[in-house]
Length: 212
Image (cartoon, rainbow, N blue to C red; front, top):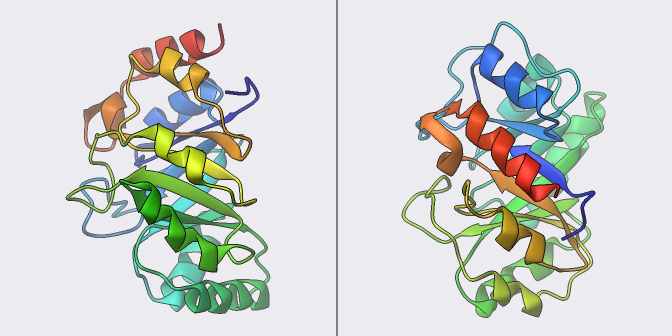
C-alpha cells in the first residue's frame, strides 16, 4: 500500500484522546452521531481536531439533522453508514451546499463476497469516497476482517478506505495490500481500551510499523 495513505481513526468523542491521536498524524478523526452506537457522541467535546479532518458518521439520519451537525462541528466529511440511497445523498449534498457547506461524502458498504461490490455501482459519481467494511452483526465496529482479496473485483474509479477489524498486529498485512483506488485505512474498535477511547500506545506502534 502507498506510504502516503490516509489513516482515519473512528469512534472518538473525548477531547484529550482526540488530541493525542491527532498528534500521531492521523489524517481523519471520526465521530459517530448514531445513537445506536456505543461510541455515540452525546455531547460536544471541549475541543475538536484542528489538523486532522473531522468526519461525522451517520446512519439513516434525517438530512436536516446531518446538515445541522455539520455546522455545529465544522465537519470536513460526512460518512453514511446505513442504507442511504443515491437520491438521499444528492438531496443531502444540495442542502449542504444551500447552507454554505462544501464537504466530501463517504458511503460505507458492508462486504463479504465479490457480489457485495455490485452495490457500489449506483453510487459512482454520487459519493466522493467509499468505505469497505466487514459485513457483521452491527452496523460498524464489529472488530472483524473480511477477505481483502475480494476487493480485486472492485473496478470502479471512486477511491476507498479499507476498514473492518484492522488491529495492532496488522501493519504488515496493510502494507502488503495493494489496490489502485485504496486511499487509506479506517481504524476503530481493535485499538480501544473501551468504546470510544483509543489506546494511544498501540496506535503509535502500529503507525511506526506501517511507516517502516
